[in-house]
Structures are given as C-alpha cells and as structure tokens.
Length: 192
Ligand SMILES: [Fe+2]
Image (cartoon, rainbow, N blue to C red):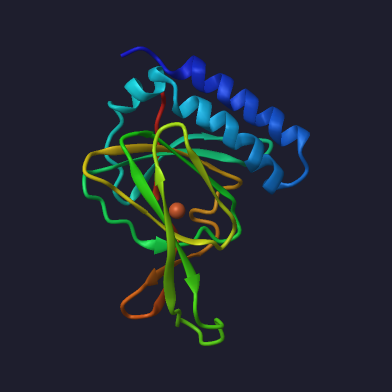
C-alpha cells in the first residue's frame, strides 16, 4: 500500500497554521473543514482507508497536537452500523467521510434539561456524508453517525481531546435517559 503519511503530514502542517492564525475554535473548524474536504477527496487517502481496521467502540488515534491540543481520529464502520445518539461535551468536531457513505443525524432537546438524567429528544434532520463533504458538530450538539449499505471510513478533527478527560453525554432515546460516558477507546494508528 502506498504510504499516506506525507499527505497526512501536510494536512497536519495546515491545521497547525490554522490554529496559529485563528483565535477561536469556531474559526479554526471553518478553515480546517476546507482542508479536510480536500484530504478526504484524495484518491490516495481513499485507497489507504480501505486497509484501516473496523473501529466499533474505538477511534484510531492518528495525531494529537502537542502545542494546540487538537486531535485527528479515524473511524471505520461496518455495513449497517447503528450509531448511538451522543454529544462531544465542549469540544468542536469536524467529521469527514473518506470512503463509502454515512448519515449524520441531528437531534433537538425537547425538555429544559432541569431533571437530572432525563432527556427528551427529537430528530430534526440528517445530512448525507460522502467523501469531500465534511460536517461541523459544535459543542454539545446532539447527533448520531449512521452507517449505510456498505463499510464506511471517516476522518475526525477534534478541537481537543475529551476522551478519558471529560464525561460526554450518550442518550437513550426510547428510555429518555442521559447516559454519561467517557467515549471510545483510542487506538494509536499510523498512515505510513
Ligand atoms: Fe459524534
């Protein structure tokens, strides 16, 4: 397999320049989105992603920046993957499908959040994720990533690492419950 490391290194250099240039995570994510869309549309990355392992309950950890703290993950979903409804606490997340297709469902909160552990949610829309289109998920936005009729792979940029550091919310729609969780296991992985 041709190494995707040189291309990924350019992407990381671009992200570092973006983080240096912009003062807010919102502006950084908007700028990073264009870079991720270009990377995710690259035939080399797409070919490389076909060799990435399945990651149910896990994230591949591709990079964590020592200075700015942003993180780049990859995920690989099996066909028909059913994602849980969740948020990413106070982190901004950029989500770009590299191979296959997914849908990103968005939910609105119907209750006022005043009852501990209770949440009533309503599905308000879904965007189809395909290579070259990246979605921005703002802090505490409630969503779910759903697989399609084939295996899918995606790259994720997180404004900071929350896994193992900040509790995130999972949501049990039917039971109307909030389930606190630490997030997926981080598995170091190289694109060499
Ligand atoms: Fe998510």
